[in-house]
Image (cartoon, rainbow, N blue to C red; front, side, top):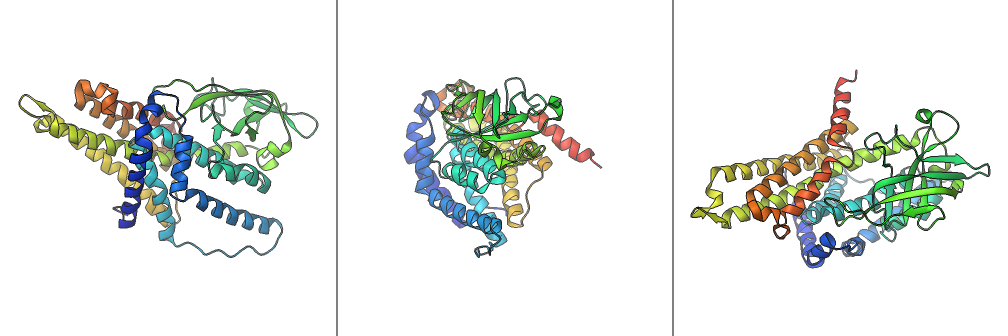
Length: 411
């Protein structure tokens, strides 16, 4: 794939119209107030038929899984062509790209709820767990949070994990621990909470397990939203559990499979990291558009600043970054159309480059705008703050380097 198709361009136009009409008027409240993004996101999903599609796809999936469990013939389903698979990925990426032109935080809030949290339950949950928790997340009837990071863990998410689950002797578990930097944490209705099984072994040898928690459970505390540098439209908070008792039905998959939580997290990281490319593309495209417009109209020393070679160099670098990131997005779509996906190392390389390119582009945009670039009115200031987190969440740049190098050095 080397360019968007006419169908893709039509969808993109429709998404842009929706964003202009429904989201742009609320940017001030989202960015500088405390307006949660969820009602706007729900309206967007309903407008484009995503809710109905999610219900239909979920129903087909559950029907197949129930048939396998009961050893009965599975419902027939048409096999999608490679082109259809790639086209579906493109259709999912387009709204991400367009939203990130104005509000990358909304993409993060949506992705963690509909993507990471729901996917974790769909990947390892029982049929009953999927019906109970996954479908409301996919339709955004409920808001989800995926809780792995702890106050003292940082990049060493598993090694430094202190949250524990201890068998209570009645078939249930007693949970204790705290999480931080949790997207949707203050508002989450459904939380996938990762911890270590306290079975008497040394902490480094314990299995990582996941539990699904509901808002309001005795012993669960959700903080107010944290103030942060960027992504103001994505509420972030802390979670803590203190002697929270849950039955086995809350244990994801209802099995204490050794290190299943680690496997789930790695799969989630791969998905999250590849998604950064689409986010970075939207940010870079908007920074470039704003910068080109400004370079044409801003006059200094008797001429538009776009006539100065140093300004032209900045614009040229932005365009190179845009082309490279777009090519990585197209690569993902093309791989999907061939039944392939990026490895963890490839996803890490994708994220490393796209995140760095987005931040560099935004900084150049702020510099190009001069004093105006430092003002919120001109928007490159917000995009610059928002872009920085791409180098941090889903694994820092330094962690991406480690994953890439390990893969290269592996025999």
